[in-house]
Image (cartoon, rainbow, N blue to C red; front, side, top):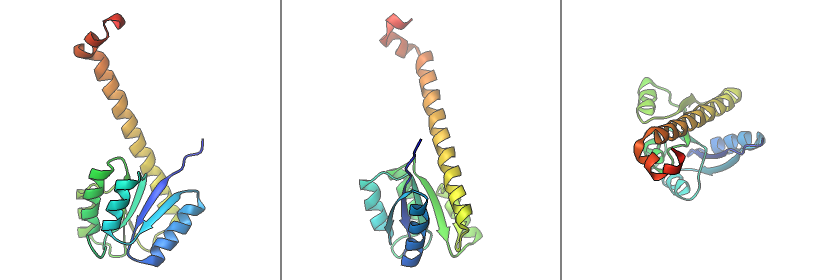
Length: 152
């Protein structure tokens, strides 16, 4: 089964954007790139993404703040912070704003690709589990049974 992963790269460094795009397109991902948070927000209002790679230091907004905004726009999207300025503070802020992953520049390509796949699988499994739990609750809740008395 062919699965196409739609990815957004948010980084103010054009070389980083081009390198990441080349790597991800090389393994079959669809890729959009933007250089700042405002453009990332606009892109997420227009297009659903499976993954966002977000630089922590953007010219118009902190990557951690962008995480919060993108979580509201696309809650199922996997969000990974990429940074050339690793620190305990940046990692803690990323975790607090619900980043799904955190990776430092320069990154190991294999490690990055494995992280993306692992996080997509985890998020998909969590979503499918939630759907199954909701369906089970519906079956066991009287109000839903009354809507279909022929199924009693």
